[in-house]
Image 1: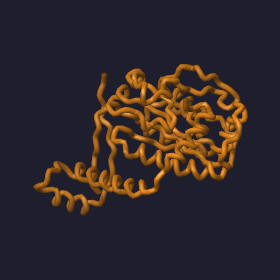
Image 2: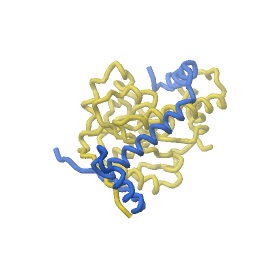
Image 3: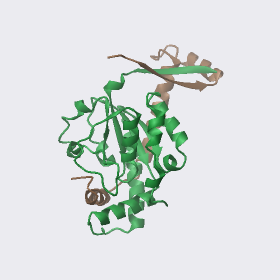
Image 4: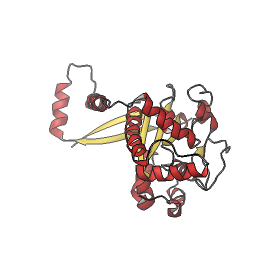
Length: 200
Length: 75
């Protein structure tokens, strides 16, 4: 057998690490894991922990201003920032992105979103859960195509369901993605099955 | 700032490797790795183009955005 070697010279400080996915797909958990693993999160702590996210949201408000506000991106180099999947397409060229994209059973996402909306006092929208699930499946497919087609982005897809039920293979994948530079033991500690509350 | 090299190794059958090595002679490719990387990128791009045929309408996208706003994830 012959070996092909593809080399990319790159320092960790040059990457902007991004955690993305749909809301309620485990992005805050992944932020928590990567922080424990040794990455510095870029967050403003404005959105406080609550019943839906007891360990915090790890959000950075300026992210919501994409694509108009990109001035914070240099600050994100060498750190990890949570970016809603919808906004990933607005990440400007000129940087290298390393992305962990969270996947989760769509029915669980819908159930979790429904509860969160109720707690926020939001009325039900026009779509049934079935319609929204079908919509989100197609939406997710479109987002993944966009992410996969970016030459400036390396992506690792992680299933929240697998992470909560059989974490070790996911941990292997993450460690490989980050060149083994994260603290596996501490990352593993962030996974709390008690927080897996909406199961399909 | 230290610069590191990141390697990913993929194994291919030796006859295929030899075949490619012969094929790239006289082309602009300087190594089998370069050629294989080019071919794989072309294949993936082609697959992604095929998948793009399914169009997500502006109305559907707005429905999703409404949901994201209701959840507080989008202004």
